[in-house]
Image (spheres, rainbow, N blue to C red):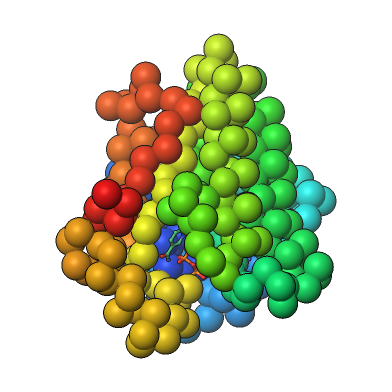
Amino acid sequence: MATALITGSSRGIGAAIALRLAQDGYDIALNDISEAMFEDNDIMEKITACGVKCEKFIADVSKYDHCEEMVKAVKDTFGSLDVLVNNAGITRDGLMARMSEEIYDLVIAVNQKSVFNMTKLAGTIMMKQRSGRIINLSSVAGLYGNAGQLNYSASKAAIIGMTKTTAKELGSRGITCNAVAPGFIQTPMTDKLNEDQKKAILNMIAMKRYGQVEEIAGVVSFLASKDASYVTGQVIEISGGLSM
Ligand code: NAD
């Protein structure tokens, strides 16, 4: 049985990806920053109901030593690591003029450095296996920028460069690396926007609605599947036509 590790997967897009990959037949390694994130939700039950194995691993993916311990534990528990989804991410929005250095550094560490940590560590296992799929969560903010999100858009643009470089470095070992760039998806992250912000965003979307987490999970499932075996270094925008 193949194994998928999804970071930041107790809720939101990460949980939807984990459930979809479980439905595809993968054993699932869930991750989040604290045990508390798994309280009051039934993601583990939903995944085990698919007939696959599921374990949770508590780690702060911005910290290399946490990632090292987690990747080793996943390999020891499941025997292989076939799909890595770098999903964990945070926003700490504010105009650049008022953004503190601490807040800038925090978002870069959680969203961007985590991708280095996890890709380096999981990539080592995948190189030995001579197969693997790495899927990174970028954002339309990384493609086009977004006022009030200098830190977030920097991290999400960096992920695009990291995706292409990983694809070039690991391609000869049978490993693909792609990114998805969601637009506005209904999750706890976007629930924080006020009504005026939500209205302005809907006006820009051709499909005149927010995306659902399952609509991101479906594309990730495709990128992890056999059908995507010759797709690498690509960024797929999933935004309901936000950018046209
Ligand atoms: P979310 O806040 O609902 O979920 C993010 C998860 O990551 C949470 O469970 C959180 O606890 C976890 N996390 C945060 N810091 C962590 C850390 N240091 N270590 C481990 N886990 C950590 O957000 P979401 O909307 O589901 O977003 C998931 C991903 O998709 C993020 O990378 C986000 O930037 C990206 N994205 C989301 C949207 C959107 O509209 N929701 C749009 C574009 C991109």
